Length: 206
Image (tube, helix red, strand yellow):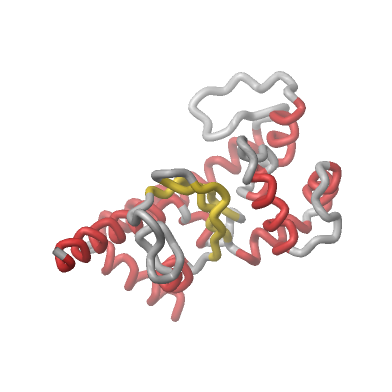
């Protein structure tokens, strides 16, 4: 029975890695600060490293090359923020982003860890704080427009609501989307997820 459980866990792990390798492609490339993803639990409690998901920290750090925090825990899944420390730090230090977040009560001169700690604290409430959009690379005008409830620009099929001039928003969406499409195509060309991961490791080493 133990052997079968391990086999199922490994299948879940590989499927989760495939999903994350595509969805975090722009973050891994440093062109998007973070990605917020709902990750299904594999364990009823936690694994040997304190995680409810199929991955271990070694998977997340060495394979994805990202840091992460669990923003919300629910019975069957968690909302996990996977982030690129350098890109997220630059995003949070951007003057306009920093001043907007300070108006919302975030520490004006806080470190990346201070800002993430405050985001986590707010995420413990019933609703996810809308300013998470800044952390995951949405243009500030769109995050602020949503929070201030101004009329949205009428666009359809977009991953987030757009406010004001749509050109910056559409350009940003295209960059993020192309990174995912490239990762998905590369994963299809690879001989399984292990081969894809090996290719990533070789690129980092070169």
